[in-house]
Image (cartoon, rainbow, N blue to C red; front, side, top):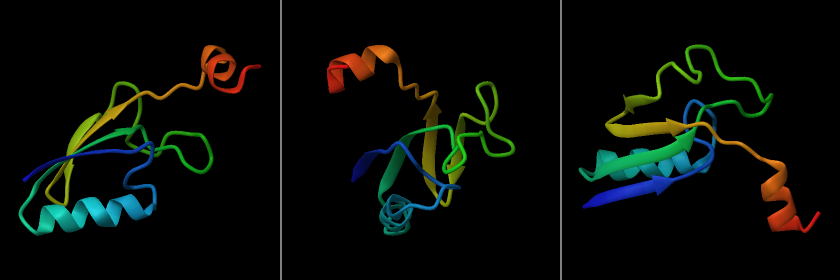
Length: 82
């Protein structure tokens, strides 16, 4: 089965979603993760990651595609009405 897993956080950040994606891949499923560039909990990119670095990789049989995530004033106005 092909699985697309979308999460704001993914390895090397430590979240339950990592285990779920890795487990599916270990069972033979084709897993792709779309995630942000790792920066949790300090808001700074992890070493080796950045806007122009390591945005596509394979970790434990899981394909990972990373994008820049941005919380803009537009989103704040639309979602929170502020």
